[in-house]
Amino acid sequence: MHLGVRAYAHGVAICTHLDQIRVVPPDSVGGCEDCLRTGDRWVHLRVCLTCGQVGCCDSSPNRHATKHSHESGHPIVRSAEPGEEWCWCYEDQVTFELSE
Ligand SMILES: [Zn+2]
Ligand SMILES: [Zn+2]
Ligand SMILES: [Zn+2]
Image (cartoon, rainbow, N blue to C red; front, side, top):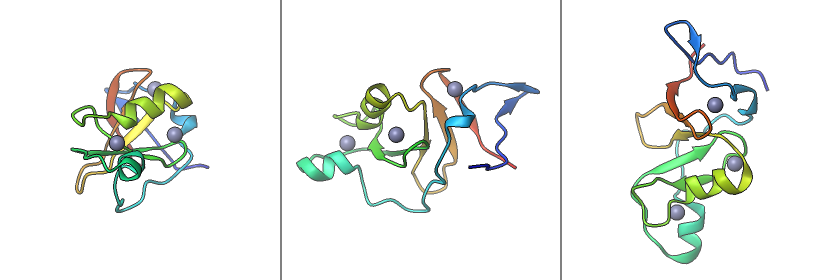
């Protein structure tokens, strides 16, 4: 999928995994898929940009987004909170935004 994605800071590419972005994040998400299954709570939500899985953030008790990244090898999540567009790459440990 070609998104016309750029993730540069001061002219330097800061994430080297942009080719692993395969999904366009949804406008709204229902909740952390794993927490919904077990009846747990979450604080904030993240969307995996490789497979679209919704997981909870590191402030949540279960940290499903981080767990998913480690288990699947999918490096990039995007915030699923309303109005937040930042992405995080677990491999490069950087925050960036996607733009045309
Ligand atoms: Zn990266
Ligand atoms: Zn969760
Ligand atoms: Zn994934």
